[in-house]
Length: 239
Image (cartoon, rainbow, N blue to C red; front, side, top):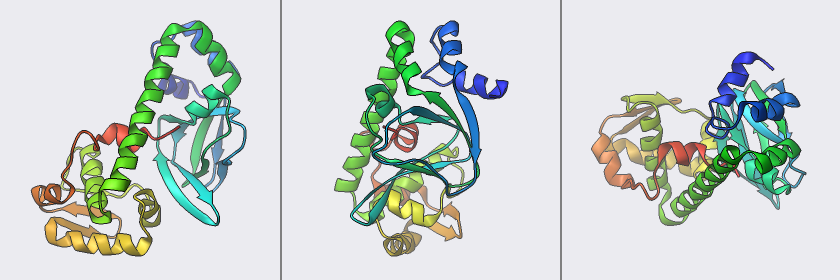
């Protein structure tokens, strides 16, 4: 594993406060691997043998049932996913596949559980991260149940713009079909919702979203901290 990757991983809130010797022990058996696009990293229902840390590229977390499939989240660097399954030693509830060329560090789950028992700072950080993930799942569920497709798209655009320093435009960080699945609509419904937002402050140019009237878009989404928190909402759904 590259030294700069170890430094980036060390700076993650999950590992930041743990004892140096425990971080060394935790990463001793870890290894990194680079995958091309559209490679399945884990399968829903399989044993959670490794914590995954995305250091380059992006990963789609998704689930399927009876021939249907839905996107749960998109994970970007530097970020972990499947922590809950690793700590509980339980099957994965989601599958994961790369969306582009992606570099992933894999940390054995058995080592995570062993360090959890002896490092109080790591234990507290683990509880904090799992709590944040839980709260993000609640926010995501509230949005799916309480907002219309048009409102969900408007809220997503506002959150993404905030993550992009509130610039006048940004590039969608995923394909539109993935975005549609993420906000719980069909690609056709997403297209209609995008067209409907053109009258209230949003223009679409391919993958670029241009916000022409921020207040008008806010009037559609009605953002609230009880449902909209950019960092937690977009990065936290990683059970």
